[in-house]
Each structure stands twice: as C-alpha cells, then as structure tokens.
Image 1 (tube, rainbow, N blue to C red):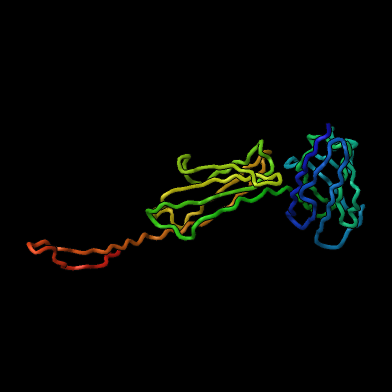
Image 2: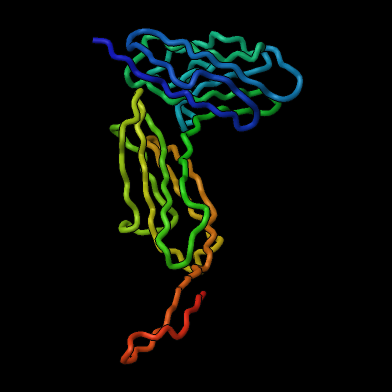
Length: 248
C-alpha cells in the first residue's frame, strides 16, 4: 500500500535569496520534482561556472545530489537529478522511487568555484510570544509562547530562559490541516531586579533544529491607592473625622 509523505523544504537564504515550494505531498515509490530558484549578487554565471548541491537537513556532508556521483550518500545514488539549469538560476531537483524515509528536510547550496558560496537552509518556525506590555512589581505576570509544527509524534520542546517547572505549563493541540500547536505558559511575580531583563522562549525541534524569540521585560512599581475614612464612636453614633487618598 502506498503512503504519502510531506517533504519539508522551508528554505531561507543566508547570503542571498531563494524561492522553493515549502511543502510537497509525495506518493511513495513515485517521483517528485522540487521547484527551486535562487539569486546571488554580481554578474550572472554560466552553468559550467556554478556547482549546485542538495544535502539533508543540518548534515552538510550528507549529499543527496552532487555533480560528483561518488559523493552522494548511498541510499540516494541514482535517484536524484538536477533538472533545473543553474545558469538560469534554477535549482529544481528530481527524486525518483521516493521512499518513506526520504521525507527531508532538504537544503540547497550553490558554489561558485574560485568565488563565494551561498547556502539556502532549513528554517524552523519561530515561536510567537504573547504578553501584556506592562508588568508590575509584586503582581503576577504571564507570557505565552507558542509554535506550530507538523510532527505530532515528536513534539517540539519549548524552554524558557527563566522559571522552574512550577512556573511553566505546557499544552498541545491540533489546529487542523495537518498542523499542531504547542503552547507554553510562563507565570511569575516580577520584582525590581527583573526590570529591563530579556526573557527568551526557545523551540527545539526533532532532528536538532531550533529557533527562539525573546521579549524585554519592563517592570513598573506598583501604585497602591487606598481610600481611608476615619470615624470616632460616641454615644450618639459614629462621627466622621477625616477621609483621605493615600498613595504609595
């Protein structure tokens, strides 16, 4: 029975720009063509002046496509082909006899012999932070960190730069269309030493990928307002002596 898998190709340029389909649903035993184009600064080069390399995830030495066949990892030999013309800035790749363990992510690298090299690599979803702008000394404060992912069997782990287990609550939920969300709630009572502190939420994904987001905490001194009324009791009842507003 054939199964379909999604190749994750979230590729972002480190030194230039690239365009690629981010998700492709593939039928196992079939083939897949991954559309890809790229840019680089300077004068346009011919195909013979460029070397395009596709590799697996963070393993830069694990080539799934290389012009030198001897450098391609064993399980991809004879199954990958650069169908795009590098001279036209097209890095489209074909994979035949697709297998269930071919699910990526994949990264593209362009090399200019005697010149610069550019990498287009996997970029994880960045966590989103939700919080009140104002935090008050001595009053409970909460920050929510969330990230969307596509692998429910290996949930991303969200960690904070501060706070113990008793201050962190984590929830998981499906949001439909093959996507899931992890939410982490950090609650604490800030003090004066927390003012201007950076708080970071890091997302650690299966396979070693990670990303993070941070916020700068501004703690204000709590202003307490008391309405004070003083009474004196006499035989005729309470006598109103004074009322005042007290502020700290």
